Amino acid sequence: MDIAPAAHRFDQTTLGRLGFGASTLGNLYRRMSDAAAAATVHAALDAGITYFDVAPHYGFGLAEKRLGAALAEADPQESTIVSTKVGRRLDAVAPGTDLSALRQAFVSPEPYESVFDYSYDAVMRSWEDSRRRLRRERIDILYVHDIGRYAHGDAHPRLFRELMDGGYRALRELRDGGAVGAIGLGVNEWQVCEEALAAGDFDMMLLAGRYTLLEQGALDSFLPLCAARGVRLVIGGPYNSGILAHGVKGPGPFHYEYQPASPEIVARVAAIEALCDTHGVPLAAAALQFPLAHPQVASVIPGMNSAARVVQAVALAEQAIPATFWADMRAAGLIRADAPTPA
Image (cartoon, rainbow, N blue to C red; front, side, top):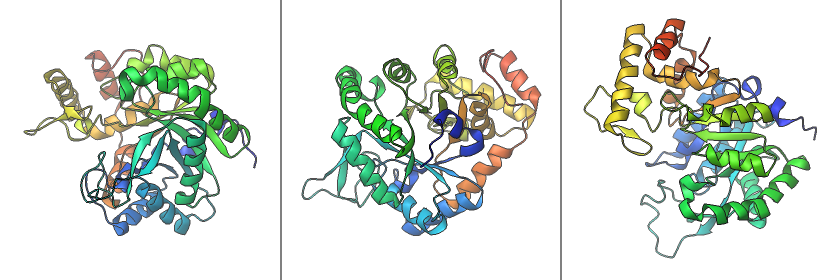
C-alpha cells in the first residue's frame, strides 16, 4: 500500500471540512434503531461527507458495527476515510448486568464495558477487533483515546508511561508498516497533545471542545507547535456540549463541559448570540465554521444522530457568514485577536 506522509494526506481537501462524529451510532445517552443508524450514515454519504470517526468505546463496539455495516453496503471500495481509537479494551460485563441501562453514557445491548489499557498488546488487539467490526481492510487513522489528566487525573503519569512504553510502539509499527495512514491522540485537552509531541512522532490530533468560539487557549503554544511539526487537527465538540448549538435564550438548563454552565459562560454565549442576531447568523453555523479557519484544522466532526441532523449540519457548514460578524466578534473581545476567522 502506498502511504503518503499523513500531514499531506489528511487535510480539508481529503477529509472534507465537515466530518461525521459517530458516537451517536453507539446509542449515546439514548437508543437508536439499527435502521435509523444506517439511514444517518447513508444521509451523510449522500451529502458528500467522506470522513467518519468512531471508537470501540462508543456503544462497546456497537457504533463500529453499525458504521461498518453501512459502509460495507455503500462504500465497498473503501473510498471513505475512517478513524477509530485505541486505549480502551472491551471486557465482558459481569453476569446479570442490565444491558438496557445507561452504562458509561451509552444504552447498548453489547455485553461489554470499556476499560483503559494503553499497552502494546491491547493496542494491537484493539486495531484488529476494530477492523473486524468495521469490515474494513484498512483503518486510515488511529487515535489514542482519552489519555491525559482530563480523563485520568493523578493516574496520568503512570498511564502515559504505559502508552509510550507499549501502545506507542504498536502504533508506530502499524503506521510505519503501512497498515494505518496516521496516528495521533483523541482527547479533550491540548496539553497532553503537547506532551505526546515532545515524546513521540504523531501525525494527527483529534481535539474535542478545546478550540471553539468559547475556547482559544490552544493558540498560545499548541497550534503553533502543530504548524511547526506539520500536525493536522480534527476538531470535535464544536458546540461545547450543546451550548453553542442551542444558545441561551430559553429557560435552560444550559450545559458546558458536560455539566451545568457557569453564569460567566452563559453571559459570554449570550453576547455571542446577540451579535449573531445582529448579523443574521445562526449561532451553530458560527460555532461550526470558526475552527475551520485555522490552517492546521483538517475537519470538524459534530455528532449527528439522524438523517435530518446531517442535512442541518451541512446547511450550517455552508451558511454564508459576513466578514463584519467576525470583525465585530473580535472588536467585542469575544474571540481572540490572533484567532484566524473564515474568509
